[in-house]
Structures are given as C-alpha cells and as structure tokens.
Image (cartoon, rainbow, N blue to C red; front, side):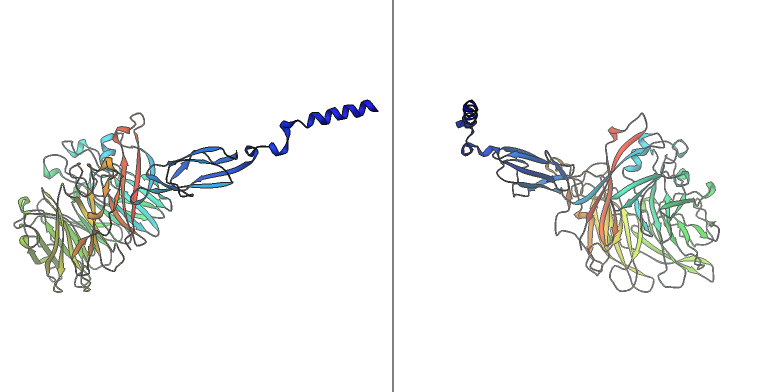
Length: 525
C-alpha cells in the first residue's frame, strides 16, 4: 500500500513540471480564421486559412487582362498586402475595368479560305461590317474580303462572310456563311425590318470595267440567316452603294444599286432593269454629267413611290460639279424617274471637291420632314454633311464637318439618338488613316502610357436644329488597341464593336487565328 502511494506521488510531481504551468501558455497557441476573395476582374494569391495569432501574412491581388486593382475591403490600396493577424478577418480585393466599360469574347477562327491574307483583310478595315437586330436577335455581319492586290477578280476568290451572335454574355458564337454570302468587298449596305442587302464593290485590277460584284440579300430567321444572291453573272456591277425601298408602289420591297440598276421585287424574286455600262435604263432619265456612287430611296411626298436620292463621286471622276445632290421622282405619265432637283454648294459646305460615299435619310431638325445626310471622302480626309428639307422636294445645305486623315479618320456613319434627348445624332465609324494611327482616335504616342482608342470624336450630338457638336463632357478612352469600330444602339445605349488580334499569331498548320471581339458600352443617357 505504501509503495502505491509513493508511486502516485512521483507521477503527480512529474506532471507538475514548471514548464507546463497554465499561466505560462503563450498567445501563439490561439488561432484565427482568414478569408480572402477576389471581386470581378481579378484573383488573389490565397483564399486564406487558419493561422496562429501574430502570424505575418502577405496576400497579392492579381488583375485580369483589361482590369486594374482598386483596393482591399479594409481600405488598403497596396496590391501586395502585408499584415499581422490578431482576429478573425475577411478581405475582398476590388478591381475595375481600365477605361471604358466593355466585354471581351475570344474565338479561334478557322479560316475557310486557307489564306491568311483573306482572313486578316476581312477583319481589318472592312467598311461593310454592321450590326443588324431583329426579333431579339443581334447579328454582327462581317462580309468577306478578298486579296485586293490581285490583278483581276478571277484570280482572287470571294472572301467568306462571318456572322457573330450576341447573347447576355456578349458576342458568344459565330458562323461561317455559305458561298451565297461570299463577297470581294462590301462598301455599303441597307436594310428594312425584314432583311438587309449588301453591295459588292470590288476594285480588283486596273480596268474599272471589270470592277463587278453582286447584290446579296440576307434574311434573318430563327437566329440564322438565309442568303440569296440577287444578281446573276450578267447583272453584276460596281455596287458601291445599294438601297431598299419601293420603286413601283406594289408594296413589295425593291432594290436599287449604283449605276441605276433596278431590281424590282416580285412574289418569287426580282425583275432586273438596267445597264450600267452604257447607262441605258428605261426607268430613269439619266444625266450623263453625274456619276453617283452614293444612292438612297425615300418617299418624301408620300405618293407611294420612293424618290431616288443620289450624290456624285467627285468632279474629277466624271461629274460636272462638286458636292452635288440630285433627286429623281417617278413620273407616272411617262413611267420614268425624272430629275426634279439638283444642287451643289462647294463654298458653303466644303472648300474642295468631295466624293459622296453613302446617304441616309432622317429628320435632323425635328420639323416632321426628312432631311438628307451624306458621307464624303477625298484624298485628304472624310466628312459628313446635312441638307435640310424645304418641304417642296428641294433641299438646302445646312451643316458639314470635315476631318483631316491624320487627325481623325471615318468611313461612313450611323444615326442614333445616342444620349436619349430625342434628337438624332451622328455616330461615326472610326478607322486608322491608311493603317496608321490618328491623333484623336487611335493614340500611338499614348500607347505606353495606357491610352489606346478615344471615342469622343466619333460622337456628334444634335442640338435639335440639325447642328452638331462633338461629345466633350468626359474623356471616352481605353488602353485597348482596336483599329476599326462599328457603332450600334442596344436598348438605348450606344455601343462600338471591333476586333483585336495579332496576325503574327496565325496558325499555318490548321489555318486558324485567335481573335477577340471587343464591345465598348458608352452610356450617354
């Protein structure tokens, strides 16, 4: 019994060592939980864990492409955060888009033509790209472009047309269209609520008589597009511009192409009238002193038949006067479109000979009468102008703005109410100047300092009287480098969409290239 007592005492004494006293337990045996997460646009080096009190921890906030770090939820603005944990802690890394708000959607495009030059040319400086919206579907139409360096069109196959489709996540899918949609190069297009038409205006080779392409019709249906080549080989022409309208009051849409080529719609297709080689056409009284490259249809007087609005391509290209606008009206007695108005105003709008490239009809001064807007080009730059409707099928020059190429370069324009004030604004389609950056759209000198595109000079706001001013309330910039942008309006919000890619990344083994579709959102409301 005594031996048991002694043994127990020894054990107790051994457990009561001075090194194991409760009062000597250190704080570092206390643990705390750290939770770390990243907001949209980035990531973090750790999601946290359980740490002993007093542990020094370093956490890095890592920005995704096109984003920059803003701050931590504890207020720190250091992307590499160092702190000592003394309590349960939650941290969030906050990021923001650099510059303008945008979406980026990436695609690996397999080139169906198996020629790098065709794919690159189709994506770069393509004037025929536009956004068409119908029944809730959104289509980015990218007409095919061929290698224009060839000597003739026979040696340069038509380029494949691409269509991109937009959903809630952005431009999320694409398709390569069939041969019916293939084109050499589309300069202009037109559309109504049911379909759109493309005008193929190839300029391949030195012989202008061989500059021939097609009129192509696209009809969206259930999210896809049905294509129809309106022209047959004998009806091809230099379709620098096309327009959809009503040329014979039968309520079936007709198509008119440059050269006054009439395609009259019927129940099964189109009846062709015209010969642009000799400019002989029984449906129009043609003045040989004009050479229109821009054309549009609109019924100004409400008689059920559209008037033909045209404008010449410079005096040096066969027109007798500079900067002219002409109106032809249908004469039911003579069953011919006859010229009823022509005017030019080189001194009030321009101080040089400018070539018309497209025409659009809208009411710019809110008087209930549709006015004429024209895009023009010259060797030195581009312009847009407004002609006001006098109410008697005559029009007066009203406003014009010209850009020097190295200052700001544009190719055509769109018309939207960009800021929701009820007035129709002019939204320019910006591009590089012959592949070179411009001072007020694409900043080469600012690229290293975080600036790429600037959209202010693309946006010209209407004061309600048909006079326009550039948007200057804030700088609309982004460090992204996009050579060419195409404006459209979605739910009242202005957008610009374009492509970002590196031709050097072209994969020659499978003829593919990665491209990003960049969509800038510019909410001016």
